[in-house]
Length: 281
Image 1 (cartoon, helix red, strand yellow):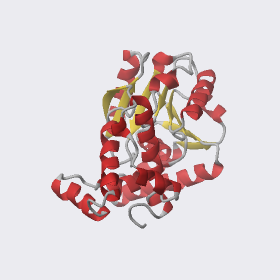
Image 2 (cartoon, helix red, strand yellow):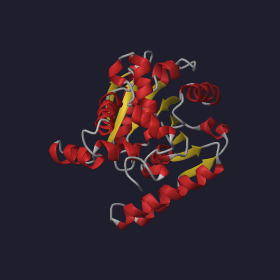
Image 3 (cartoon, one colour):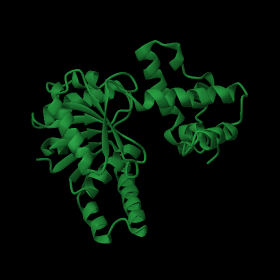
Image 4 (cartoon, helix red, strand yellow):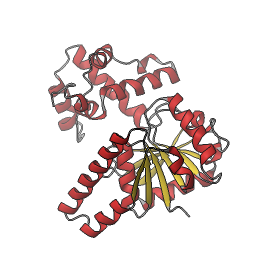
């Protein structure tokens, strides 16, 4: 029976994941090495829940109850008693593998360890544990409280029961779990990132302005957001990291990151979070 969920990482994805679990009646322990990140996360969750109350989608009492179910900690040891783990730390394989090895030692042997990674191999993360059958990818979409999809990734050794439990948990969160195999980029980013990359090549080659490219994809292809606006929203550094994972994993030149993307990341133009990407914020 899953009652308490541990979420590692208090960034954009971590706080969104913590919010949806708390809203769905789970006790949540959010762990991050930085106390400031935990304070920011609590503030972000309060604001997000407040918006749901304003729009009449959530009762004030339910918001207060959800906030009451949240606990913040800088100590990974605080997760020793949780019933389920979602890791949403920085997208670096060595850091994640170290975390999974530590979680394997800390948590009960029957506890599932899941990762919100958007492109790193679940099999590789699972191999850092003694319970690879209990390791699953749970790739939530941003912004987590609003997006219904969760990409569920089955590693080489993941047990069918683990996939079934993760799928049932998605339903309890009001999300739809869709299964993907453990190939670089899974489904979402394998299809999305080459499109974003191609849009950046089109800017570099002068095929169209960012505004023109986004307008074509919104008005012509009925996308809710143009690929360059979306890239700015995701973070150009994150887009570059995922493209590098795809390129390294497949060794196929079609995944080669556009030189303009590399240059923008080198310049610190990372999109919305830095105030400048393909657009100014």
